[in-house]
Picture 1 (cartoon, rainbow, N blue to C red):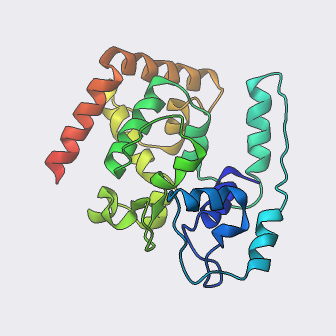
Picture 2 (tube, helix red, strand yellow):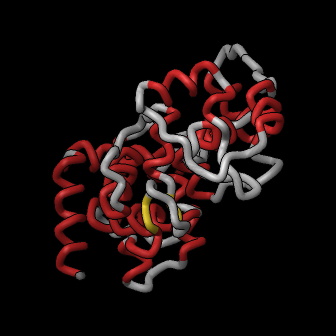
Length: 232
């Protein structure tokens, strides 16, 4: 099961949301009952039938463990997993495999503009809900209607969920960093994130990395955010 699938299951068991109009009975499991007794969880109502809760608690989650000899094998498995279900957007694929300074700057700026205060490459599974983009009536996550790109009419909600905001940030950031100014094309963005392997792509990737290191992530982030403030 994917990490978000486990997170949804844990959220239900911890009474964060209802299923079929009812909440998980916290007395069903020893762990949740202990948290209930300590006051760390609160039972929400109406409570689901105990038999239904027992079935959820007893469900065995499948888990697969793989060992890889190289990063290329990891990327190949990632591509195969992404071939089914909800496919990642092009920008999500770019950023997923990129660990360079430019990609880090884009991630940091995007997080700050969206209102995600974590801005970290590592996030515990139980903290993922805090950076989820949502417009539902939930007590956590980032309200999509309050995101800068939505409020300014630049992107739609679906485009924000597809990380199109990161594409815009990457495009502007490259314009700020490079001379001569690069063209605004999807293929060029691929090169900046090291998503392409041709000689010219590697050259362009090296140029943006060198320029980002020269100006530093902190400086380009501050400059970009100052521009956003002036725009509002």
